[in-house]
Image 1: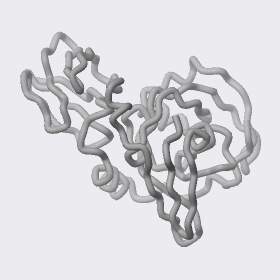
Image 2 (image 1 turned 60 degrees about the vertical axis):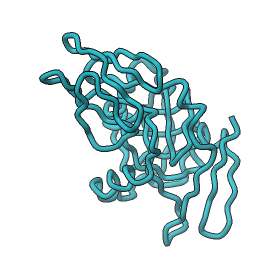
Image 3 (image 1 turned 120 degrees about the vertical axis):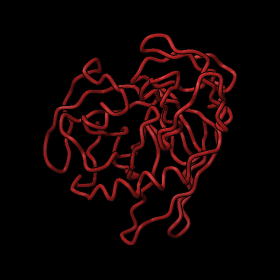
Length: 223
């Protein structure tokens, strides 16, 4: 696994501002649906990493998500025309929507020339740093838990960072969204300690055409 060229001491930024930015860049149609809770004939869900919203039985949201029924701690949804059953804490990615997602996204560099962006992993909001020196996407343990990644079932190993050798687990993420682009089955590593920010490594970037013009980087989906 490659050594990251960043020290991982970067500030994570204002989480509230990050969530607001995520809501602003999320696409209008639903791809990722996370079931947060159930109560009184309603389901509390997060769609595409946006703000939690309550859906009554029989109602379809503007994002194309309809709550069909509730049974115990699970609920059945229709997501982009496909039926999905979720239990509280689970998420679903509509297979049909991945084909309808965008094919490109544009990032802007900060004053230091680094490219930060807001996205999701398995529907959970993430703030990414584009890192071409990282072999795969890298996230910390807490982020993995938020994204419902069962990292302990992954392949254990060690990797070198700017702070020395750390224990990691190699996993495959169901979905990763950056801007309007969604990729499925993306390799990643989960670090035993929390990271200040998720690193958007080459397991995602290799599936993109990367074009940089000044302070702008365009990522175009290849496959």
